[in-house]
Length: 208
Image (tube, rainbow, N blue to C red; front, side):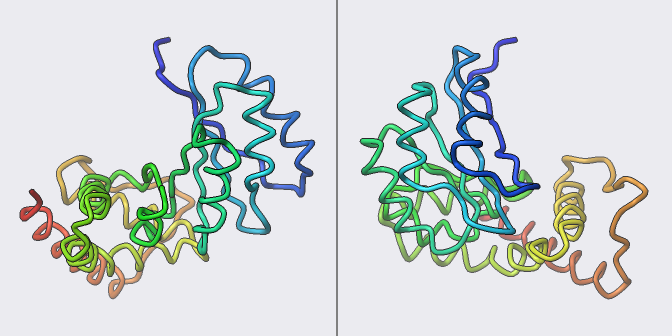
């Protein structure tokens, strides 16, 4: 249907060996004629590393990107690049929480939520262009909102609420309604999220 790439999330509900994961991915990645991205979000345990990335690339040549969502990723990022000869790019999820740390070591991109994607892209490009002071200054203005929304490590519904409220504030959604079974914020949280969003809107006006 014209997609330029497919994205596949590893199943992490149960503990699976790397052989099991490879068996799961092989028919998907080799069943299409476009590059593929593999996402590994594993809150309950370890994630795949350089050895697995190299095995997967060998068996699935269209494997092109790996999206990771974990702290202290630099060593693994460098190892993946070395083991795959730079053929597999690593992207960071986690709302861009670790991008300043990772960009100098070869991070090829970020995949945050939509609401702050454009602002975080500017931070990424500034850092990649060695404009470090500007990158840190802009990121510092975004950080309170990033950190508050990423209480989602304990409560993902908080993230969804924050994301939709900011998308609404930016005029990208007509309302911020979630499904019925969802997080209901108290009035104090509502006021704080709105305050954070007002500050983000001010920052967005200054973006180059």
